[in-house]
Structure formats: structure tokens, C-alpha cells
Length: 155
Image 1 (cartoon, rainbow, N blue to C red):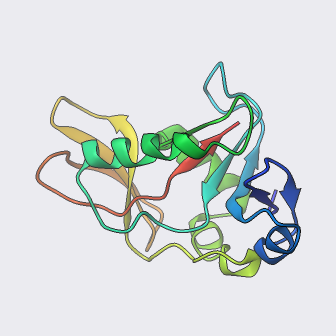
Image 2 (cartoon, helix red, strand yellow):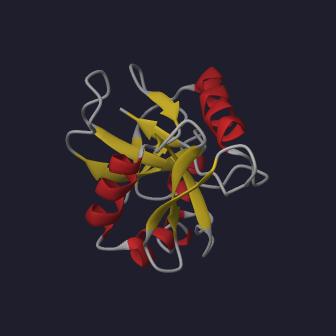
């Protein structure tokens, strides 16, 4: 954990190390172990930066899926992390603040002290999001509200 994945699918200590090897870093490994998904069962990595804008829930899912045109790890996929996957990453990092603030050390952009969508629905009109000011996970209207988005690479 803590290393970055280059666009060649290899692990590097930092984004600078990946870039100097000619392969820009795309994600930071934040969890190694069962991911809760049968196909992608080795670990989870988060993109080094947020998506450009806050967006509603459906747009967040689409934005993460759109990253699959440049998939660095064979057999991996970009997705919007589920509620359970976020909880695994937060626990693996040692807490929400450590996860949120742990990207600048490898050459990425730290997450904001704000709300990030999960892919998990609560009802037909509500989905869960993680609050990175206190670590709470709660629900919000999927179409009426916008949240920050950080794509997850499941491998």
C-alpha cells in the first residue's frame, strides 16, 4: 500500500519515480485484499486527483467508468467505489483523515475536506456518500445534489 500505479500497470514509490521511468502515475494503492467484487479481488487504488467538477450521482458513475479507455492494469477496472470499498480503504489507511491527506506525499492531490459519492444506493432516489471532515457515511439525493468524485481502480 502507498505506492502508485503507473500507466504501464507497474508499481512505483512516487509519481515522480513513475514519470522518470516514462510512465505517468495514475493511482495510489490504498487497499490490498478482497475488494468485495468477484472479478477484481486483489486491491483498490484511488486516482491521484479528483474529477474536475462536483457532479450528481449518475454523472459520477459515468465519469469513473469513462476512465476505462486508459486502463493501466490488465484485468482491472475504474469505477466509483462502493460504500463497503470506501470503508475498507479508510480502515486500511488508518482513518479517514489519513486517507484524505495521503496523496501529496506520492505526487498526487490530497482529497478535499468534503463529501465524496459512493456507488451504493440506499433507495431509488438516495445514494451514500463519505464525509471527509469527520468520516461519516450518510445518504443524499442522487439527482438533486452534487458531490466530489475520486475514481477507484479495482484490480
